[in-house]
Image 1: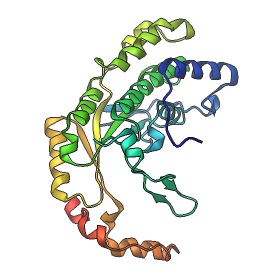
Image 2: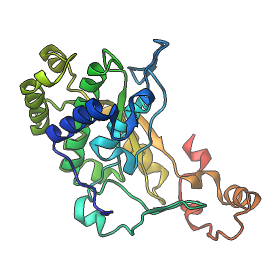
Image 3: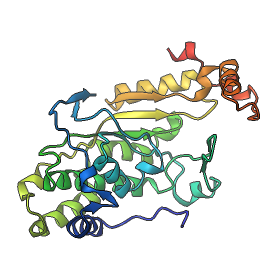
Image 4: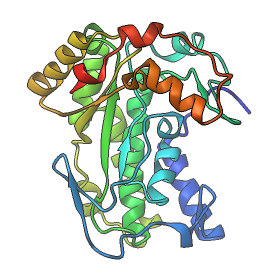
Length: 286
């Protein structure tokens, strides 16, 4: 298996789903009887978005490529935290991350970081999945209208988040209509409406260009509480987004973390209190 995530062009992605569903009754190996459909009709509102389930993936390799985001939706995810982006990306970041970056045969070891795609590639994947989910949900009778929400994720300091690269990413997910990938997706769908039974041109035109109204701030170990507050205020006041702050396990404090692991039998896992001393504390966090 390659350790590089490879993207699939939007048209190929759509053809794959339509053909597999027609021949096998599945999409990306997920059987159609396992597709989640909100039978109750009840909705939950999160950050102004009406969604049919509060469940969804946290940012990770599983929310990096379009096909994985689509698979998450089919299996029931409706609040999807997109893979984190930062100013370091692409090949530069891949060289900095050991592989395998996640090893969870028993206790889990994770050195995985932000997206290994470029920021532009990540943006394109999120837009492709945004279109694909909505047209396939309509085609398969899962939902007549959008019933899921995206939550973008950025890191790791204010300087990087304010850089043109990351600012462009944030603004693009607030309104993607002017992007090249938006045109690619809309053009393909309009030109291939004959492949669908339940999707019309008006359905494609109705897809909203605002992909995100919320954002998660991901911080590295050692990020000062004052920096976290500055970033949060910037995202709230200037970017006008609902903000989640992702805290690290060090929030528990060294003594609590050590005690929990010892009581669960993981006495052989060794770590010092170094990061606990410099990371955000629970008191500072609240």
